Image 1 (cartoon, rainbow, N blue to C red):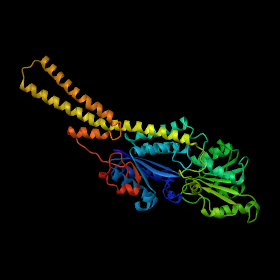
Image 2: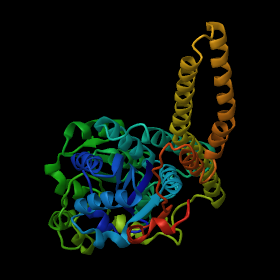
Image 3: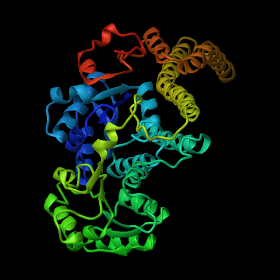
Length: 458
């Protein structure tokens, strides 16, 4: 069994494609069960955020696992595997572990160092546990990823600026209209992103109003930031009164249409041309705000597509304030943790081989002692016991070195090969596949495992 990561993110796919992958809670549950119900996937976690949808799975075959997972993702996106191929990345074993750790640490986020993805991963893992789609193989991997994410944020300076998609978006708003201190801001959506937006706005001194399709949630959030509650039916009037509109709902369709915003802008002065601008921040995936809103006079839209377009050569937002030394320290920590987990996983992988070898030796000893008792029936009990102890000591000493060494060697790259050799030498059975580390979907489907060396990359 081996770890596989297959998915799309802001690093490889446009926002329009990411919108096709958008999952609600029910979609995620369905996807989890579809994955573990496939031929080659035994365990799975689905991480679905505003800028990524990735599956982390334990699979029994590389090719089979890639095929199963990519088919499920294609079904969710309403596309074919071939259409998605240019945008899907595939990571395997050590590279899959390192990628998961990198995601948990916020290093693969649109804004480097953001912490929200760590909570999203925690929720994804909790849902997978609740649905019974994680087991012995993935529990330690997911738990280690959460610990690594916390370590990176506590032991490096990667999040010293407290950057997030919300804070970067609000920075863009302030570039347009100035400080948010005392300005009326409407937040539509009271989920995790809405809560982050509201609390960040409150810290900047904005007058926050919260609206949601779940009034109780909106009321709690409004109270927590000393703001006020607004009914969704009053959105036109609330938008007319606001300087900034932040939307982040879990709806699958447009929540705020062009006509609603256009009417709100007209009502600001009673004329076609508003006297003050409105900044619309749409952080939802799929988007909440009709794209036509961006063409309205006086309206400035900040959305995921805009932030994605601003990213630098490293694939992250150009607004990221994280120092290169902090990023390097985070990567070094991830590399060390990946090596440690690899050693633990490989040691666990050879344990059945060691156990099988000792069981086989014990069976041989028992059979030979039985044979001795039938050939020399007159041996007294004391002598018989001493002979048995001697034979067992000899076998234990002969097996000690190879079993200790195979456990030690398992912690090195390709260490499982030694367990394969041990199984071959002692006739314990072999079931191994040579696999690539990281590739894109097209290469993953095309690669011939027989042409790869252990640990190689397609």
